[in-house]
Image 1 (tube, one colour):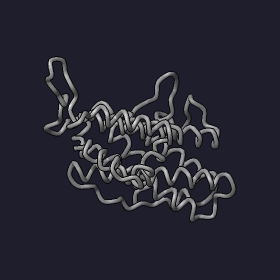
Image 2: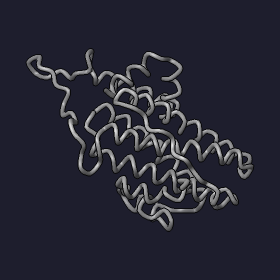
Image 3: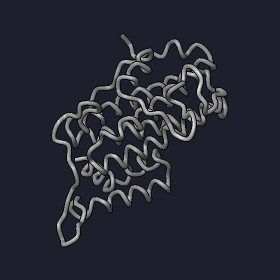
Length: 232
């Protein structure tokens, strides 16, 4: 179960440190503690009269969003892509000074997401293989690079938001929303750098909040957006 992976992280100080750093530091540590506490001593929630319930559990594949393992592996695919993109961006020589420091920090966060999701996927079944990527069109100049990074981060935030209603495990949902929050912060910072406001503009329309509420994306919409970055 996902909670087993979370408890494994809790028992491994080095993994926990990387995971919490990726989710936002001290604030995330408190959320992680509450998340573990919500599992109870044996991963169950106390109910009146001493009864315990794990809540609704997924037993088959959801028609719209897939099983929890499928959702985790889909998120892992995105995180693989993001982590690889930041690695290639840093190696490109296009990022200097504060921009390079920002990209390095974001890249470390994405790698922490990768490690956390790999652990959860291993508990649920088997992690998906990393995708073959192609960022050649983005690595031709600073502006195309920043635009592409912003697009990927916005899509990532929208993907987690779109998957949330289909996640059955409560602890997994809490972890996914924690990652969603970090992806959204990355997206906001990059949107500011490229001059994209919250009303959205191509090619980010639909993934940038266009008012009081963010726009989620389905798996197919996400695949359509990241397709240009996948090697054929």
